[in-house]
Amino acid sequence: MSKKIIVVATGGTIAMKYDPQCQGLVPACSGEDLALAVPGIEKIAQLGFLQFSNISSATMTPQNMWDLHQKVEELLSHDDIDGVVITHGTDTVEETGYFLNLLHTNPKPIVLTAAMRGAGDISADGPINIFNSVKAAASDKTIGIGALICLNDTLYSPTDVMKTHSANPATFAAPWWGPVGYVDCDRVIIRHKVEGEKRFAPKKLTARVDIIKCMTGSDRSYIDFAVASGCQGIVIEGFGRGNIPPAMIPGIEDAVKNGVAVVITSRTLAGRVLDVYGYPGSVTDSRRVGAVMGGELTAAKARLKLMIVLSEKPELAKNQIQLEALFDL
Ligand code: ASP
Image (cartoon, rainbow, N blue to C red; front, side, top):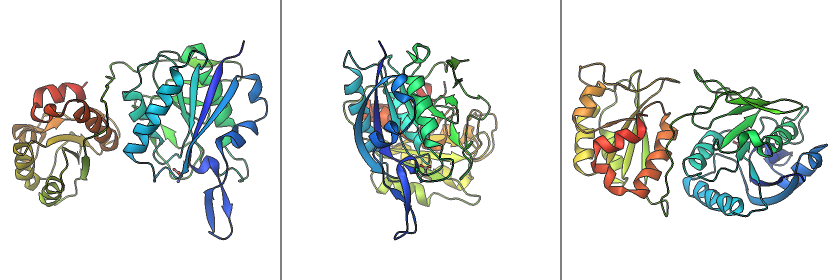
């Protein structure tokens, strides 16, 4: 008997068509219309459908991601449902995928997919991406390896993947790590698994976390603004190994004294933040005043992780060592 896979549609270009009045692509198709139009998909799995939303992925919020997480886990708790495919916009699918993965403990697969071309465009990539994602979700190979992102025949871990080109259908890549596998005509192939990612179980999403991107010449002003605006955490996207302009350090010191967690990430595409330098603005300096090294995560993913961590255990904002152990894996 074939497996049962639910297609949960959230929106994105995959579900958009050109509207002459708006002079651009706009949401136009349901997930059910999209999936049922894919030739041969009914031979892969028995399908069910849920229209969660129909929005561009720039409209997605952490609260939407939380609501999606609850919906997906509820679906997966049913014995007769074997996996979920989520259609999404490419702009932020790496964030939603990462968020869902941090909360996903059920071994059943969640596969997120998207498209760079609209549903009415020449050579639209949505149909093949949906087809491959259903294949991946219905494969025994993807059981127990967390959420996956599937585009262009390729399977990625949400931890490593990023959108690297604003228009090309081969936009997704996992710099330095590569894909975890791919979907071939006859089978799904998994080559490696991502080790060590922790899972969390907050009851609600309560923590606000802001991102501050360093510029040459940055000072403490945006940090002060974020603290005054009531955030519980700040992710600072620094340079290289996580070094930041020295004029930001007093702002970090005051933020930490006020109970706000500060996590340092890097604008490089890969590699860890590390305290290898000792000069003003180095990670040695920001750690000295209470900041936490953010490991290998992009600022966007570190921000979602910090929201989840502080929603589960707000007291960790005041525990540099324990918080760092969750990020610098
Ligand atoms: N702007 C679109 C979105 O993320 C891009 C896409 O889906 O490819 O919703």
